[in-house]
Length: 238
Image (cartoon, rainbow, N blue to C red):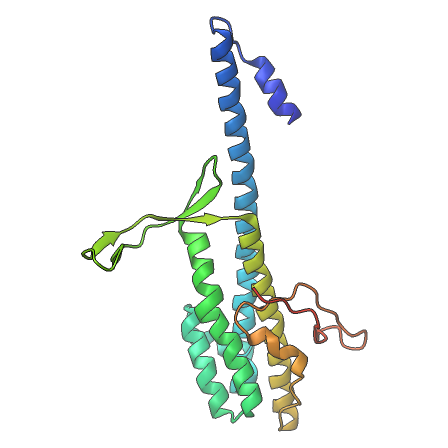
């Protein structure tokens, strides 16, 4: 703000009327507020991109215990599309004869990626971003056919504007973190299964992670096993 005030003082207003000076200052202040909003939104989107890379990697790590092969061997068969990988994992879990509670839980986590988290991540990162006095918006350029009202003819719509807030982006990041952490538990449990030949008991405290909109921002770890997060008890929905 000090830099902005210095900038305002450096402007030559000579030749402008008092009203013109007032309007010029208002316009500059408006531009400054929009730039501040732009910076906050783009920073949050950058953090979201990093969170997605962790979630994407958590999906890949399920293949090694399911296929009982090395990370190098897994890397040779993986496809880039995350939905395709989620579908492959669901088939492998069935082939592994995982107990029904484990199967349902892991299916739910993978479905959240394909149906909830992935699509919204794509829209936030691939739609155009617009910042105005009213707030920030993403512009979905995809054309859609539909009716404004039941008695009207079908028409084409595109460039739909959807409001975006910092809270929206952070909320999606929390969901990514929640599913990533739960997939870590799934990976460790599948590794235990490969070692001992049976699936461990699924802790019911982890079940909410597979439910649509569930999120948890705080996870604890045991001093004896730092790599395995303890079951959370503070899931929120929404």
